[in-house]
Length: 93
Length: 133
Length: 158
Image 1 (cartoon, rainbow over the protein chains, first blue to last red):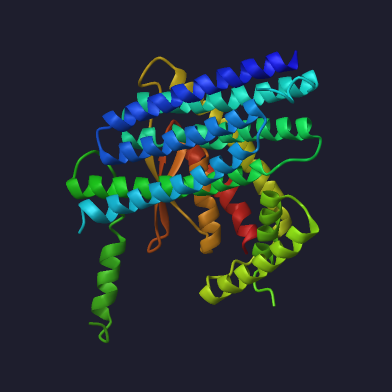
Image 2 (image 1 turned 45 degrees about the vertical axis):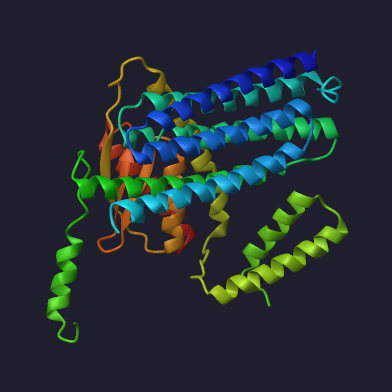
């Protein structure tokens, strides 16, 4: 019983997160300006991180948690660097 | 898959499913809003749905799942939660400032000007101070 | 000996959360945390002073409640079919707090609440520029920021 509930919930959650990632990447490709693309990337990696945590719940392994933690840290640094580049790189030299 | 899930009590499974669906639903709504809202400054609000209670819900689900299935208290997911709650405002603030900067420099959009009372004030101060410059 | 006791304690906690609690990891975590806080001390950041730390749980509760409330409000705005169902706008709020840590906490609180985003802080005339997704009554937003958050933060970081 509880295995069925968990399996259904994890599958639905993974579908929703995958849809959120798809939408974020559409905005990343379409986004009218660079800042829209960067926020698209930010949303994309946060949803990917959540997807990894749901994989961890699905398989019962803890290793996915560490992957998610690393992903969050690298994504944060990447977004900050890109935002800094937008401020310093293009408009003002 | 789901080796340890079969011997979980039903209430725990329902709680995990509830928080999981709330979290991923909020993340999806955030992404939809990110697609639909018309301007950049409105779009910046949408992903915070996913980064506040979206992450919170999925972290709670993971904490309940691993605590019940392993029989001991597992709450290292809190680390991801704290980390994301602290870092997302920083990225969004930097991006919003970059966007303001670009919009002001190019003069497009209806963004408010830099509060320009500060600039003359500093100049007046500089002129009245003979030691300066 | 310990220049930043709170930082040291949270580093030890983080180490134990990541590695699991064993006596060996406790000793290793304490060593790492003490050396890291000495390294932090040699950077000489501005030291935050907590005057009424017992009010922190109250702030935490208020913020969690507000985040739930504004999550629901923003989700409703997004899911509504009409594209112009809300009234976005910029908002300039003068601030009274001067403590840098308190301002940082306020920025994190306001940005992680969906529906309001902190854009920039002008330290010359001490105003902050916010963007609000649903600016129907401006007075209520000002009242929330000034009375609900800022007063509490001024008490905590006196």
